[in-house]
Image (cartoon, rainbow, N blue to C red):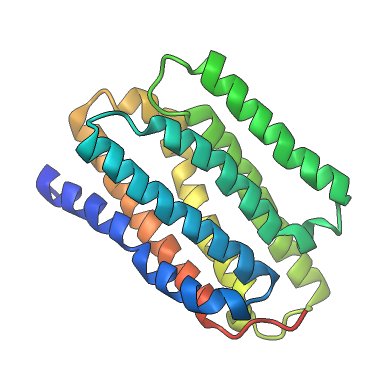
Length: 216
């Protein structure tokens, strides 16, 4: 695949958020806990996409500050999506400490550790590991308790599937992104791959908002 097609794929991927965004507008008032926080995550993601486009195309500046802030907000909202699952193992206080600790780590990393690099690769890698862990906790708990009779009818199943696919395959991209990005060819390939995973994740988000909310 040549660079032009990869660029088109990357650009197309950024537009795929429109589908779950449309569902989020109609679902948010008739949503359960998982869908409500997923709607918030989608709204924030859409704002970041628009802000990034404006900063890059109009201001001709770097959008990394926006992305760094988004990483922290994204992680916090994902934790809230899995809050009911995490309460089996963590107290409410520890859940908030997890979010706060990640935010402090991200701030320290962006100001000191990776301040000269272009992408907060370490923070994204840590976020990926934590999110994958939460998803695995959900699947483990679900298989152990058999509380969901129809997985395909549960919003959290589709959210978990999208997150697991995206973060498990993106983990190594996050780790090596600041090194491979030096090569234009490698950069296009990496972010083309990332675009595919982002598209799949948005499809999973759409299905999560489309299925009937679980009774809580």
